[in-house]
Image (cartoon, rainbow, N blue to C red):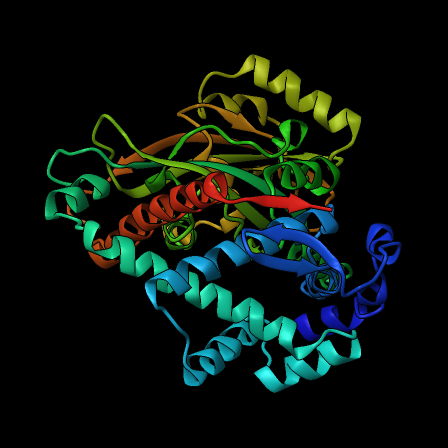
Length: 403
C-alpha cells in the first residue's frame, strides 16, 4: 500500500519551488548557520525528499527550517565529539525505510527516480542519529524516573494518572475508498505543524471536532481505547501518529500536551453504552431527529421509550470490556461523560446515524498494567523536553542569515 503511495507521488517529487528555481545558482549559498553554508541545491533536495515522504504544507519553509536545525544539531555533535559509524548509519537507513515496508536500497532506488541524491537521504538519517547521541550524552543522566512517578502515572496507589490533550482526524473508510483513505492518512501523518494538521482536520475529518481543527479536550489516558493507549503514550507534544485503523474509519492523532492529573483515575473493567440507530445517515433529517432526541433524554433508560414501537434491533445497550469495543466507538466514548451523547458515527454503509450515549464505566480493581510502557513514555517525554529546549537555545545563540 505504502509503496503504491510512493509511486503515485513520484511525479510530485520532480517539482521545485518557485523560489528555488529562480535562485541565482543551485550551489550558491542560501542560508548561513554560524560558519556553515546551506545551498539552494540542498533546499531543493530536501523539498523533493519531503514530497517523497508525502509531507503537506509550505515545503520550502519547512525545508529551510529543517536544514537550519540539522546544521545546529551537527555542530552540537561535533563539539561533543559524537560521530555515527557506517554500521549505525546503515541501520538507521534500514529502520527509516522499513516504515514504508522497504529495504534501504529499495528506498534509494525510488528516490533516484525522483531525482533525490542518496546524500540527501544519508544526511537526513545521520543528523537524526547525531542529535540522538547529543541528547543522550547531555541529558540521559538527568532522566531518573522513580517508582513513585510510575505509580502516579499509572494512577495506582491513590496517586494521579496521566491525561492527554489530543487533536484528531477521523476519515470514514469502506471497501470502495480504502486505498484513497490510506493514502490520505499517510500524508496527514507526515504533517509537521499544528496549523497544517488543523487545516487537514477541517478539510477531511468526519469527527465532531472538525470545526475547531480536530482539537479535543483533556482526556484521562485510561478513557482511550486500550489498543490506542500505547501509541499515545509514546507520542511527544507536537508529534503526529501513524494512521490508526478504527474498522470503519482511519484516524490520525496529534499530541498537544500530556500532564499528570491532580486526582486518582481508575482503569475500567467494563463500559456500558447505548446506540440508537436513526435511518438516513448524516442527512439533515436524521441529524434533526438526533437533536430532538437529545433534548428529550437524560439517561440511557430513556432511549427505550424513544424506540417504543420501533424495531428492537434499532436500539442496543451493551456493557463490554474496553478491549472488546470497536475502536471507532471506543474513541467517541472516550470523549463522553456519563449520559453524554455523540452523533459523529454512522453505520458501515452510511445509511444509519448512530446516536451514541455513554451509560457508565465500571472501575477495575486490580488490572495488570505495563510499567515499562509508562516508564518509556515518561523518559521520552522528559528527554523530548530537554531536546526541544536545547535546540531552541542553539537557535537563539546562532548567527543565522537567510538569502
